[in-house]
Image (tube, rainbow, N blue to C red; front, side, top):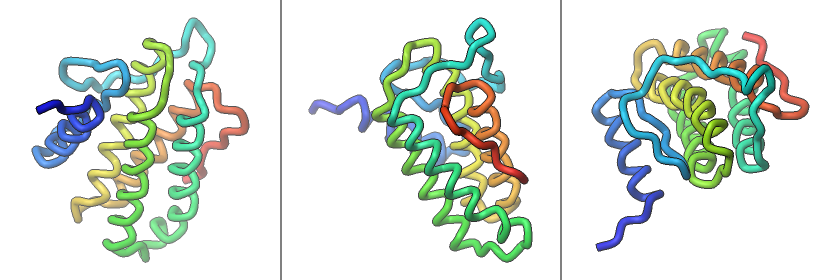
Amino acid sequence: MIISTKSLLMSVLALCFVLGQPALAAGPHSHEGPTTTARPELDHGKKWPTDDVLRRGMDDISLAMRQSLAPIHSNVFTPAQYEALATRIQAQVDDVVGNCKLPEQADQQLHLVLEQIIDGAATMKTGTSRDQGAMKIVRALAQYGKYFDHAGWQPLQH
């Protein structure tokens, strides 16, 4: 039986969610070992490169969050809406992980951001502190804009 890398990755990520452990988002360059709480770093003072897949995925995550922040802050965002938002965000993360092609060091830095987004999405599905999961994603999106070269990127106001 042959298992594709993408299938294996999705299985590992699903297992991490089930076990409640932060997932290490592995892409084309597999990273072994436990996740860290490390923050991204610039590339010798410069932002890391991006590709079309990454930019589209991050734009969609940003749009989804932008559309949701007012009702989240007003405490009118329903559990079903949090579930749908988390699912939409996870789908974009999955697409980025499966299709983004970055140089190894940029990829490693991106995983630090994606880990936070994955954790935030998982928190939005838990039923407690869903709004904190959303804010974690907003903070991760701000990190992305600070460390990655994405023309026209606008941080969210929260």
